[in-house]
Image (cartoon, rainbow, N blue to C red; front, side):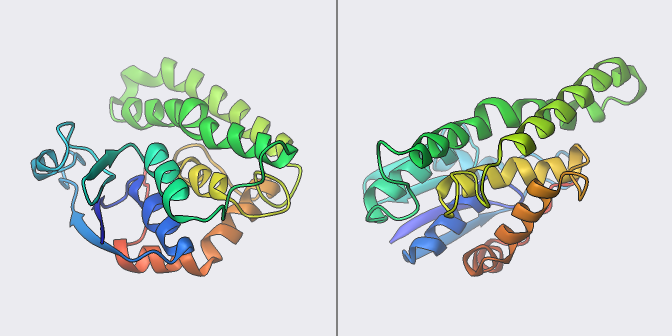
Length: 208
């Protein structure tokens, strides 16, 4: 059985959610962030030397990085579910947003998280980051051409993009003012598999 080494309020929610969508059995091994530093506990280094989550163990395979884990699970267990057919516009959009999540969306959101802890001295940089985040959300809003990131059908790109959307609610003012993104996030949260993942791993709360 797949082991998911799951840290609360982390990208490993994506892994639980995908496994629930695929109806693949798994075991959750839970870790809690330090309430003061919000860092992962040192015990995670026993499964992976970087000590970060998510990490999965599937037989002899030990794999970190949420995007790599999702691709592995899709290749190994999905039977072509949740990935649009090759050589289609939907697949091109799927690939773009799957990589956009960590390549473009998460870096400024992480900068906002860390800089906000520095107080007044960080205000000049925070002003620039806030402007960048506003432009980023406007871009994503403008690019949605269907109910989901790949188009008409739910896909693993929506799972991958869900984490930056949740972070943007907490740190970048994502709200009803960007209706396409707001309604998409609402649909994602309502999926049965999302809710089962939260029941197994805990609610995802990405406070600033």
